[in-house]
Amino acid sequence: MKNVARNTVVLFALFLLCVAGTAHSAGVDMKEGEWETSSETTMTMGAMAMPPMASKTTYCLTREDLVPKSEKDKDCKTLKQNVVGSTVSWRVVCGKSEGEGEITYRGTTYKGTFKLNAAEDGQTMTMNTKLAGKYLGPCPKGRK
Image (cartoon, rainbow, N blue to C red; front, side, top):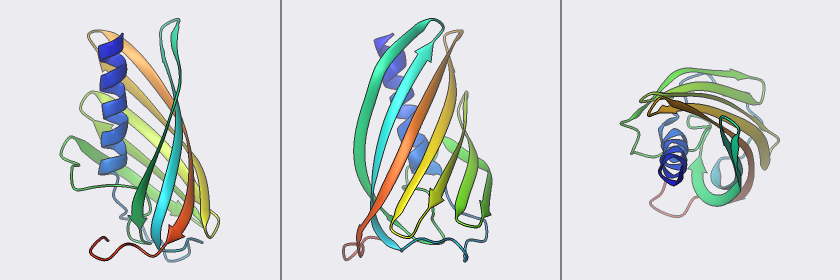
């Protein structure tokens, strides 16, 4: 179970790293710059559940890149991304795992969710993540 949980956390990290914005996003109510993302993830596999795991990280977000990502997106592929008003939704595949999420921006904050279904060794694990973001300021020099 420990390996599966670790692999699932890695898949979630890959999800965050791989999601790239391709939809028209001019109308999104968000401030471009450095954002802190807080997440709380719960995982279940059959009848077993793990306690929630919390984490925080920072990303530079723009209207072209509305969902946190990085250059390490080789294992994940965004199949669909949609922007309606200030809400961004997406669907992603990372190997044998599939997920979908949604973030709604409100100027200098956002809230959202992400759900990932991971299959490993014949077992399916579901990971539900609550996302919250807050604007910190301009991106540090050299980061975009």
